[in-house]
Length: 449
Image (cartoon, rainbow, N blue to C red):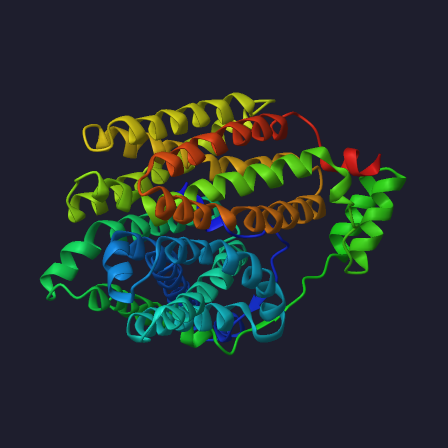
């Protein structure tokens, strides 16, 4: 799942035009050399940014028990803390395109990395639960806007290498996710055992990610022109499409009533339920293993295994999905892996820990599948953009209560039986709505009715 989280939390949208000083220098003496260095700097910035998009979450999951003890945090409040990421993604991610149009995508990503660095540095030393939550929200705000804008920058600067750059970005994101889960506990022990130090050290990686973006802070972002594309579309399509193209020529996208589409709703609920499972896993899985007697360092490695499963499967699943007319069988296969993993956590969490970690990692790859289906369930570019915005914004709102409810059940039941039962129960409707969303239909046809 996390291997393609790059898009888990990004909206599909028409990329703005990103202009940098290097673009103006391309025709001048030495311009080619400047352009080459600009591209290298962009690649470095993209990779470093991707590495920073999940450590704020998975480093906390590895040290959640120490944080709870240190702040006197109840299970319910800890559940609230693990619900903060989807809340921030839903609230702040929507703001990213508007901020990019005003200040420039490079400037917003740079500010996002700075927000991550500041939030990660401040939150362990804020002096209480409220301050810790505020610092986490600041860091996750930076994650949210960067999530949305990074693929836009990739698409503009590397139009002929979108696949390879997205793969590089996805692998870096998965690596950062797994790395924070795997090494936070050992590094904390090495640095004296202070959980504050163990969490704050990840701010250094975010500071490093700020530097490559500084030359792009003064870049300008303007809406793209669509006149030529609209004219070409009008010649090859019927009257209805000609009307759509005319709207593009005026810089407008035809509005679809997504609430009328059953497929759009199925995708939104599927997206929300898979995000619920992902954030419960990132926030609580290490604690489940630790409570079962697994050492803290090993529990972090198990979480890392779950996260890193997204690297290979993020490439395989979308390619397989696009070759099938109905993606329902893939949804069901991933769901069965999830149910098997949760059953193992319930029956023998320590004895089969590595197997359960792998199975849940496979199940979490419902995320790249959801994004692939968004692209397949709409016929036009504007339709994909509107469906993506609807599915993701609605889905993130749906995912907010899940981690909180797990914390409440854990606190009041005194064990993991009820929380794991809840996770298993949520997998069933996820399989149902995912199967419905996988049918070969388009939201344009359903919205028109």
